[in-house]
Length: 142
Image 1 (spheres, rainbow, N blue to C red):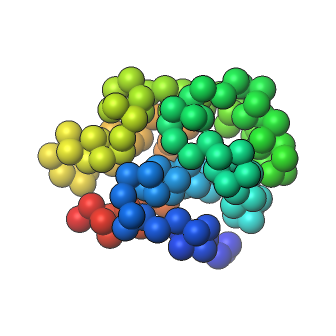
Image 2: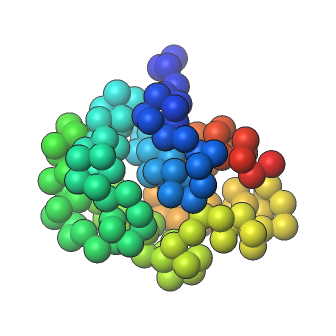
């Protein structure tokens, strides 16, 4: 089984609040696909660190082609087109329904089960992505 890459290994400190939690959300989204973890980590670094797309608004303001190009730069090519589309939808939903804040999802959820259900309502987020994200988010939320 592949080694799990942690938020800390990506330079993300989820204890520092919303911005860092969002970075972990994007990383978890990329890790949740059937792709090598190192490639997903590289794609995360290209998008968030190199191109400074580190908020839902910044990613949501990218064009589909810009995201495809960034994913390609990180060698995340197998799913680059569908992933770019889903990243845009994810950020647009987060912005429009939750004010761009993952913390608002947490606040509107009565318990962990409802929170996980709300996360899974984002297109492209399935049980594996929720599991990856919650592995670390739960340390600050529960």
